[in-house]
Length: 577
Image 1 (cartoon, one colour):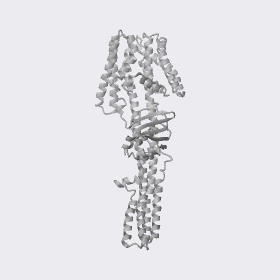
Image 2 (spheres, one colour; image 1 turned 135 degrees about the vertical axis):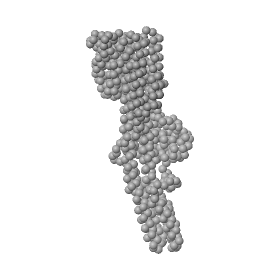
Image 3 (cartoon, helix red, strand yellow; image 1 turned 180 degrees about the vertical axis):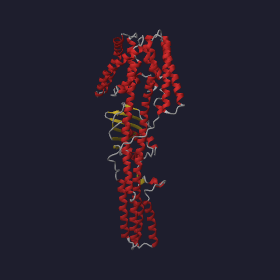
Image 4 (cartoon, one colour; image 1 turned 45 degrees about the horizontal axis):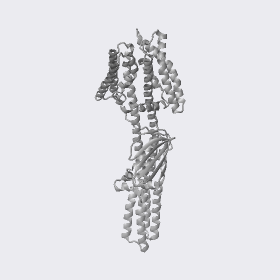
């Protein structure tokens, strides 16, 4: 959440509701953090010897009672299927717990020690409400981000495993077939020499040409065979760089101070003797936040290990808590044990915010790494498949175009009169040159010869087709492409925006869905091309921002499908060619 979102009530409400309806609002993490806050921070302020200790004991016992209630609510939350019902249950639970907790604390204190708090009940209820909604929502956002990260990582690992297995199959097939050109060349040379050792006539050359034709068709058939996809595979996780320094990165400036001021406002308004004291308290907290943030950002420049950075974070915010407690003692000398609250609350809020921001940042980084690795892997698979098919197509093309072509000319000569020794030697030299190229089709080349492997006898494998071929091990893809759109795609070159849009959509299909299918529709109307890619899945929100492309692009939930739609100006599409 940005600064603008934090100041936008609608954005704050949407963030809370998304967390409350997610199905994992109450977790063991929120329970552990609520135990610390309820048992040691938000304790009833009482005076007398051992007052804070008494308040802590009473608060912990009340927390245990309320934990049973929240536990039943958590079970119900897991079993509810409608998001709205989960949101209502979570909200009602928070309100009830926040409303009854101060009264239960008072009753427990009175029963155990005969003590009572002098703080007005209204301010304590408001403080509990603010803490409950902010604390539990922050933890829910953290856990939801971690769940999304694990789910995305698992789906990515499965897709990468499929691609690894398919690439291994291509490697095996390459090993199997790369000896075939040499064998075919040896056989054709031997047959040629046998033919030339006898009187050469039209029928002899025609028979040899038929051998060449069969060999050419064999290579073309091998090139047309579908890739053998793996029956089983081992999931592979994408590499993710871990930066330990980022685990407790400084939260955005003023977030800790403003949040703490917001949580303390009900208590300050009732305990402060004047509004001036309230203003001074808020200004002091904000100033402490600014100083702590500046110290952390300056200190991180001189720390290199994750441990020293985390230690610096904790030391700075503990010192900030000490200073805040000192300021509270100056402004509210009669507040009693409540003056100890900043000592624990400021570091706790800073840690929660740092961890929440880290979780969101790492989830986003995981998606970015997943996208890059998946796109790289599909492109690598397509390239491997294209190299194998290109070599086989090139072998067939050379035999068909050059060796058979020489045979046609040689047969025409032999049909009129026996060829001269010079003509025979020229036929041998020309066919030898072509056969040498057939033998070397699997040898890496560069320049024009490498480019020719993608264009054989006018059959060009465009970038869009290669991209789809790279996804074949991962997704079953159904395509509906209008005739006019086919011409646009084939004329769009290697850097087609249509290819980029569809590739992005297929990445999203893997990230947001456990299914292995996608439907691609491409149509053209006038000066615009429309692309729609749909796959079964579930987005975290009905509409999600996606990488911008030329024209308008939208990623949204449509029933059971995740859909990416793009409207692209035709001029932008053809500019890639």
